[in-house]
Image 1 (tube, helix red, strand yellow):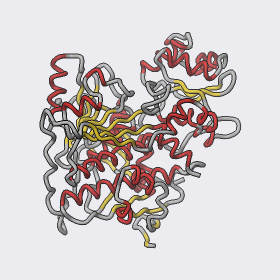
Image 2: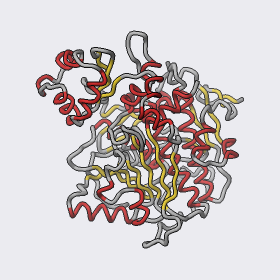
Image 3: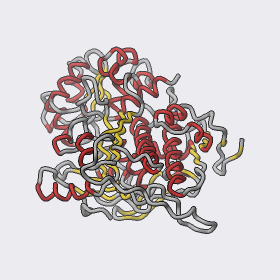
Image 4: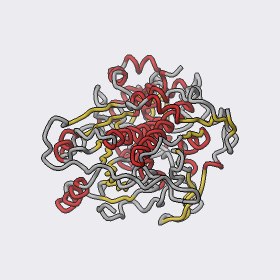
Length: 479
């Protein structure tokens, strides 16, 4: 055991609860786990459920996957990776630490919360204007009644499941509070339980490619020498098409940007992201807006796709299929691509086509009951399902790239993760200061305070090379 400069304890890999299971789900070499060392801080992310262990494990395997890819591209030994509970805790609550020109961010909107119903509790999500409007419409209320009193009075008249179904039918977001046992008995809970933590498939490996696959990754320069400030960037030269929104997907692509990838986020122009949310997850990336139903925008998007190495999607399963972005279609159009898909509820079950967010999954899966009090539901100390799944998704992409760099070039790799499956992992496992893990940066949005990246390995990057910019303002071209 050794002392960390930050005051934590560095121990053998045994405290990395779940890291071995996550690494196995990623098909990683178990011998590499010896290259990962944790720094333990018992006051980080306090909760009834083992949130700290989950967070540490998700970031840890992401760092290890980055170190593995770096070794393959340099021809050197796998660098030692370290995961510090303090840095992880700050990163998992990054949206709370962000300051934009000294201003604290706007997080949850007033109508995004738990409400009492006639028979229990329901959780709503109305951060986006269109979701708020649909919630109000489902309740028979007008925009002028978008305050807690009329909404609460109306919800108190209805059952929780009645609210869940009527709001969903109107295109909004609401989930009834369930216990772990109730979720296990629910058809969607049962469907999620059958999913692997990390779904991994190979598409089109036996079919001759109609177009050339992406070229092999070029070797990286030698490891930095003493006094060289250049970090080791295992994802340098990779082009990542980021079709994700909100937190989990953007966290994954933010991690890939940290590691040197050229990440371009693409959003529909009619669906802007919340500004503070975009700033928090936009480090290292560029952002453009394209309407795939518009001929010119579609042509620009196809040019981007033709040069991409990785496509990451965060929309409901099947939503992008009509644009030729189903995994099977991508495997035909761009053989050798890595396709990473993220969803809230998974790809099977009656809720697979529903929208969902971290807070809703916590409510449905029993986490809010486990973290609550007898008289009301609670919440995790961070949006750990979003952040944890994001780092696992990044790790799955890195492992796929490592397999390709090691010479296994056949087929298109598809990886799938779901917030609800990460929740099942957490529930299946039987006050800290963030200041040392924060820093500041100037950029197009002004002066930003933000959480440092928690992914760490020897000679690796310690920060993103560029600050977040304004949403949708970058040209739709690769750098």
